[in-house]
Length: 402
Image (cartoon, rainbow, N blue to C red):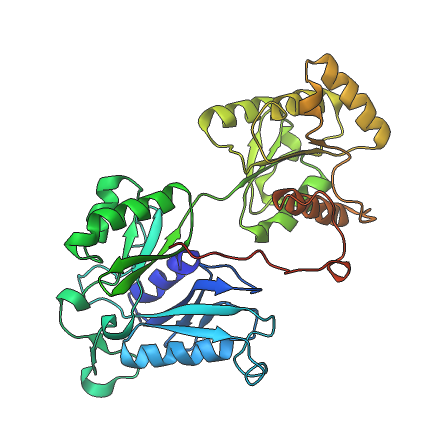
């Protein structure tokens, strides 16, 4: 839901012609599935589609479920899985199974707040939804005038009240106050503690809380800031890497100390910083702009730049440090780093020459090789081989929180 939250709010808040929309979100997955838990797809009452849940194999069925939700105003959880009978219908050809939450949203009355908050709200820490189950799903009444652009509205208050909340922080009081609209009083303390734990660990999944002879299910979708990719070197290789990395949802910074080469227009999608890279990196670490998921790619080909920034980067707790250059350049650079006081353990973390051995030559090809190595490092793959030559599941298995 969070990945298309802004788009959904824009549709509902359009002053000239607000559009009801339904959002389908993967809340649980088993086996091999194309997209992770938390992936969403938006369907507007005007026919707009935004996002994808499975790369195609269940989109048609999800679209119909969203249209039904727009007509009835009812939320639901639908299951999609593989079977011999439905493999070429709504089944997942990859053999996995999905549980998908379908939520309809109507434009608020004049002067009322949007059900998704306002566009200028701070980015939420999480979106928490109480999943409908049996009698827990809200009843509906048809809108007057049978207007197809207006979905049915929930009837009554109390148990049929808010089914989802936005959380702007993970503090105990914030979580408890927000969940008071979703949980009965006797479950609030224990439920809030478990949700807060998920937020602190930036986990997304379905939390099932025992409630007598049944359970109450909360889907908790955490939002964490994007991982930070720092590209040092305003040249053709830096430009190609910024362009190739844009679709990955990273925060990208291009850093170079030369004013003539750091035109922001040449690096769309990146924050362009004019500074000596080692000074920028040290300041970013001090500000907390780097963490254990961050990546540093040094593409400058200049020892007076390379050595200071690599010495700084290798002392930080970051996921990836790579540097471009020939094997001879790499040898000389490692010697210079040793002379600068960088130890062997830190040097062992340096990915140089940068990238996987894909036979890359052009800047665009080198960018692919670099990103391929970054993905392998993030997945803790010490060796990489064609999928054809491997065995086992293609996708990491997702365990629901319980």
